Amino acid sequence: MRKLWAVVAVLGIVVLWQCVISPASATRLPPDLNESILAEFPDGKVRLDGSIQTSRGDLFLPLLPATSAARKRGKAHIEAAFPSAEHPDLLVYGNGWCYLRVLARGVAKTVLAPAELPERLKRQLLACKFPSDLIVPEHFVLPQSLKSL
Image (cartoon, rainbow, N blue to C red; front, side):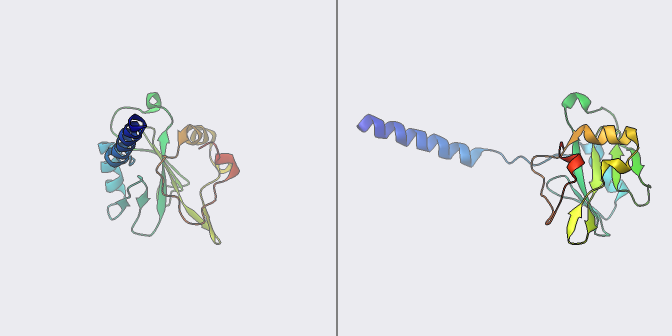
């Protein structure tokens, strides 16, 4: 009986130790992407989950390349902006990362539906994934066509 309690006590200590020392997993932006974002949005802030909060109050949610093989090397630069560079709803960077602007539709918040995108941008968007530590905006509704993200 004493051995059982000793085993339980040791297991409890190991589990507690793992909970205490396990590192937090925040989305880390590549340094060149962070520089590019701060150049594009000088008064903006990059949040803990990798989202961009602009000075105008816009929120852009990050989409990571689905696999490490899809991540391209080199300087991150805006490869495409849809519908326009002045007021983008979608930003596609050259290193495979994408950002979707959160749109207000009444009380709900959502993002651009892929049906509105050109085919090339739609393929790039659907090849990405939301980060696992994403802080989801309140009343956020994801379009059915983006459920794979």
